[in-house]
Image (cartoon, rainbow, N blue to C red; front, side, top):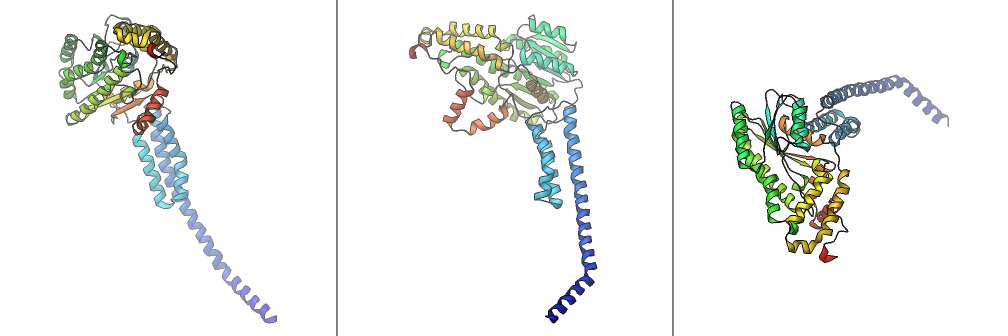
Length: 412
């Protein structure tokens, strides 16, 4: 027992003799850890500050507002640093965090080119997107040729009264070859030396009419305005746009990517417009001309007001042949259009998302090829093509405006 006690005393004495060195080693290790923590904290803070200032500058210059991309930026900003520090650590964590910040910043809207002496021609400026875009571009100092279907109508008068002398209102029906030639000649005289920077093909028309109900004449009218009118004017102005290495922005619709019952002729015209835009974009790259398509969801514009919807209903009914009238009946058409009128006000009347996309297509240093606009547009255009047909059809019927309880006369 005495020997065990003696051995214990010897071990304790030895530990005490060595303890200053052990304590010193532990202290040195802690100092090294503290130095590493401070060093990497400074690196993370530097990346965070640079990224935050870059994102903030875009908010302050109104290049984008609170939305999906801004939420993504905030997630990376507030969660990226602690996650990288905890899971990756060391220089690898800092590098990963910096790369994530760079990738997120790359998908944010780019800064805009200076307006300078750039001029843009916009079709369909009587109301809606066209009228709002004219006012926006005028407010930033751009020269605008605003073409209207009725150059003496209330929409054209409002533009003249509310915009500066930089805005010139012109008469243009995109289906009228003579008026297209007159506008092109006018632009050639005034912009021939430097070329035309931008063309926004915004003119369009919408009718709700099932394919069997749509007469050949009405089908041709919709295609002529929405598709062939755009092709006609674009081809005529291409030499001037190529000269300036400018921009072309075509206004399509979500229905150019997704089909819904009752929108047959309109959807055909918009699908064709998307194909035209995609082809033209590829062909114009070698000329330095960028081509973009705007794809809005539903917005409450002049076209969605009750009197315009009822006028279209009368035009659809008057153009139907006797067989179509017998098959579907006046009551069916009334039920469908009454449902459209009742639901029209659910659409947002703030056109800012679409106008911002148009401006980006015209002036962004990194313009996108496609600009889905509106609630859920980005997600829907990504997911819809991947769905099985039966699921896609179900989605279309749920988000469409066709009342599910409406029945044609011969099925009632």
